[in-house]
Image (tube, rainbow, N blue to C red; front, side, top):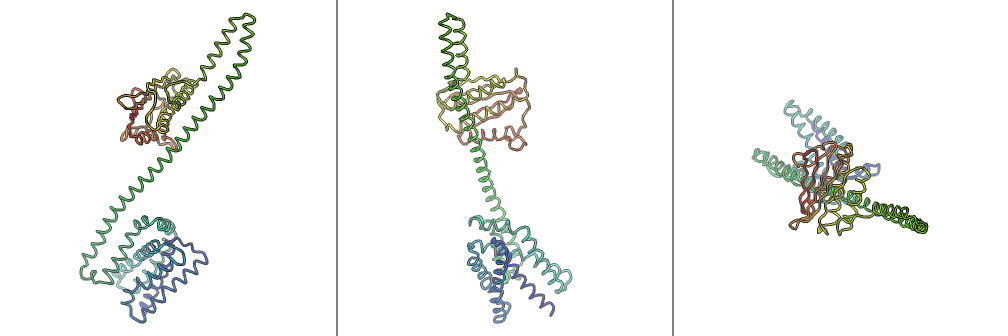
Amino acid sequence: MIDTILFYIHHALTLLWGVILSAAFCGVRFSKKNIGITALIFTACGIPQLTALFLFGEDLVWKLYPLIVHALLAVLLCAIYRKRLSTALASICLAYLCCQPSKWFGLLVDALTENPTIGWCVRIAVALLTALLILRYFAKLICEIFNKDNRSILIFSCVPFVYYLFDYIVGIYTNLWDVHYRLASEFLAFFLCVAFMVFCIVYYREYERKMQAQRKNEMIEITVQQQSKEIETIKKSNLETSILRHDMRLMLSNLALSIEQNDLEHARSLISGYVAQVDSISLHRYCQNDTLNYILSNYESKCRNTGISFQADIALEEIFVDEIMFSSILSNALDNAVNAQIGLAEESRQIKVMLKHSDGKLLLSVKNPFGTAPEWDYVNQMPMTSKENHGYGTQSILYMTEKLGGKCQFSLQDNIFILRVIL
């Protein structure tokens, strides 16, 4: 008698937490209103089960269970909580799978004690504990997955769905478990192997897409920063030009006065000083491309202010690749070269830039000494860093070069860092 009571208590609780877990996996928040609605759903699913139990008996109830309970639960979740059918079905299959720990522990205790009463008590206790743990730690994560696109739902629900079919086919609708025990048991191992392999492939592809999107965002941020620097350089140049025009009026007035007073030496001094001032702010024309001229002139000015010798060997008129991406490569290379020389004696500081066309290829070379040897990735043969928010410059150079279909090489030779890019 006690075993019978425990049997019905266990199955009633199984239905209850099956409904609760399915709703939680769908993303239902258990407010007072939703708790009441969940209780009504539990009642609506329990009534057909009890009716079928009294009318047809236990064996037929288990065969009709997917139809009178699970199908009805899926319809109610879709109708009441406005969930997609794929989300509802995935949640129900996973909730069904989550009931298996209590079943397994119950069978284990039955085998060890040969006492059905203890077995049913263990099943109830394990089921309650499992449900509480899942609701507390896993339900929120699972509902985020099951409310994504149908492709994600299919990937993450294939194991619960196949187990659901497997359990009903071999245990309820057929006698495969009793007659072909080994064949039935080995199927799960076979399917888990296939599912794991498929999951690894899909996960790797998704991870690669995520990393590629992350790299694109980083490159966009770096490109925007470089363009901001170029805009600031242009603004600074315009301001200095405006100041120069103002100074020119004063210089011409003083020059006229010097000529009137026949002070030719003072006149020559005024002219020489003004020419030097013009040369200091004029934009150096390295090539026909204005963007490259701005970048090179900007870094030449930075080097002059920080005591770095800047040598540029530019032997090309135009660039025939994406201008923004190549500008990002050049800016990052020069920025890294300037930063690498912090701590060096002034007489040792230098940057050598070579940019030319050869055999239809665009060649870029940047050489500079360094104060502290960079950490080195010997697998990918490039510098690396463990510091947070550092190392984006070399990553950007590599990414942009690959996007342009070229190759880049980083190397260290006699305390000189060398970057070579071929496009």
